[in-house]
Image (cartoon, rainbow, N blue to C red):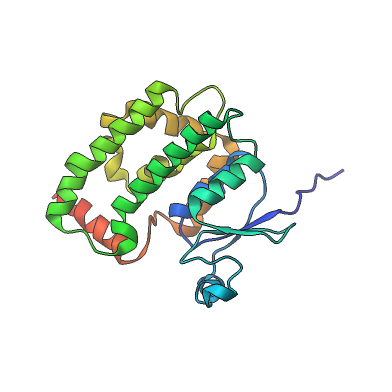
Length: 236
């Protein structure tokens, strides 16, 4: 008998890059649960550009997740992550420990906001980038390393916080390899955790497929060009 793959119960709308979308898709991939992904600019813009009163859920931009069984729709990456993590049994049983995982998730979201200059609101200037790479990023890495040492991530039972750390720093190292030395230097435990989470066969296969589709694209657009320009100046 040929095994059949169950139909996906969820559909994720996100641009054809990993970035914020991977915080959701990696949860499904880690648990080897099917997920339908809609990455068409036309399809996403058709939802995004509607009057908020006519949207299934009022939102500014993706990711957006649709429950295909119930029709329920959710936006905002951390909210989606929490919903999905509960569905996929990736949350701690204790409410306070779950809140700690969400705290780590929100730290991840803050790092994304910083590196993409608040969703590309402005481009990187040299002085600001030097401050970020020499001061802000090491501080963030030290913070994540402290969370690991406390046991908020990296515990015996993998949680959505662990996968979120991989989505943040694993994806950063893959797409912006110039920053891997920074991560290894300031957060060696986090570097090791990313390697461990990323070695899960189902997740590794999903990430490899993303790379085949999108290459090393990180956050896309002018802001990614701005980041890569700063990295090239760092190497000069």
